[in-house]
Image (tube, rainbow, N blue to C red; front, side, top):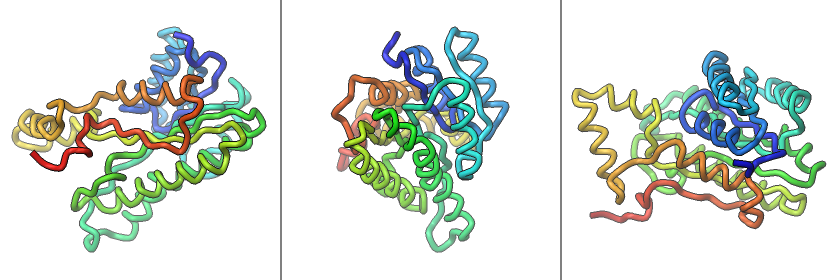
Length: 257
């Protein structure tokens, strides 16, 4: 229960789903957790729940696509806790279209939230990490960065870019004691998935269809992604850098059945 003692962790988009699970696990392991969430109610609710459970956590309303908003949030986190030495870039959005039926605004929104925001947040914390000569940046990518599902454009383009960002920054700042890695979740049972299934006449059948796609005949849980982020954020992974870890039950390795 002390794997992150002494660490200050920023987690973006932690009001729900994978981000919320990650914030909870980090706090349980002793980190001071800063939730950067544009949905103030959701972010504050998570921070309150973590604090009530005995963790150290605060919410900062922040638009992670805006450099000024992120820089202000990082400064506030530093004043309240300490300079962050862990960043989890979790905030993002699904933007799924057929390419030629997609509006330019959809492309811009996808790239802004799923790629640009990760760089904006990394750029804001890197100087402090370099000064400390230690840091771990964890980008939440997707198995869409490994295999293409038709009609999900341009989401996989952004996630491929996020893997490139991970590798580039990991190599660039390795000598400064900073590690940059990515996690690529597959199908995970978040509220987004529940809402998606609910849109079908038989939600349970759709849920089962998703489970049957995976070798273990189930889908992932947010805490399973959170536990991998915890490992990468801890001092237990000092030589893992510029790497992407898939959490998908082996689905991306399956050719067909």
